[in-house]
Image (cartoon, rainbow, N blue to C red):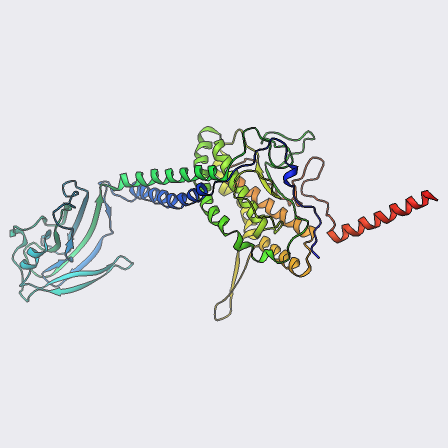
Length: 517
């Protein structure tokens, strides 16, 4: 027997006259979900590159390596041939100083040192008769490692490099020498050796590079990423539909603003989470619901990327204006609402067998979520509430929703377990599967745990300054005036309710019979 303690959610006939049914546009939603998947990585990459440009360069705009020691008993140290392309249609960058390299070489020997860059063919011909080592397999791990590969002949020395005319760029002298060169098409080799051409090279080297296009590239990535995220958000809103202006909400109850309280003075939470349990639930449908909601999960993955980016935008707005932009607020509330519907259906409550709508707006559905819009938000709180003030709640949420693991035994066996919400939802599914019943007390507890979770999410997402209460408001609806916060009256299960109704009917019949006599 399938049973539950509560009637089904509202039907279409319960909707107020004049309420416009939002219209979905799947094409807009698909494109809107895909755009943030491209835009967010571009935005993050642009911000990371901008951070590196501001913090990791030296005063001349070069990214540099640490100082590394390289030595060889041969005449010279060389790099592999560096192929920078040929002159032709693709050498647009050749005269624009797009890329610049800098080498700073300091000899550990008393004599002068030479560092030069030249055409690879000319360098090979110059060092043909003398032994020289090519540096390969460089790793920048600690410690610094490299491999030397011997080339050339067996002469004791080479002609002085300072007397050769083929060098593209060169520097020589005592102490530390610095070479700076703007890259040009061709094939080049870097050479470090003693200025007199004798054997035995012992130097400290610092390499650096500068790309002129990195700054506009970072700005472009940020702008394109923001544009794609914004376009995706607009398409998702357009595709998910919205009710006509002035239409009442498609759910019972009166919407309050963040600054209002009911007449009794009872302070309601600005975050309202509701979930009405279906009267009859399928025994086994919950086993495949996670597959059925995969289209929702794909779209929600993109929506939560949008949520994160827009929360950063809202942070800046609150910091400077004390206002959360209404359009961003409504979109983020819609994302929370959509997430709660999917969780209520498939993962965190199993409260209904009605498939959740692809919509950001309020609909005729057993599960709903709303957040009262705050007219003003504190500039000071916005700096600390998401990470510091919310920390106790985040610890609680790690227990409610997190995944825990234990490693034991010599073979490193690992046992993993979901959070409390996942465990209780699984237990509810097993009860449905084997008994056909879903106890209302268990359902009320799950709704309370989810309500706590979404209150904290809204607080961390800067949507309210009202601190989430440390209490478990169980039951399908939010506590109202005259009800003690955190308390609820347990409802009998369906079988118990049917028994009570039968006893009441028998009593009424006996009373009527007595009156007839």
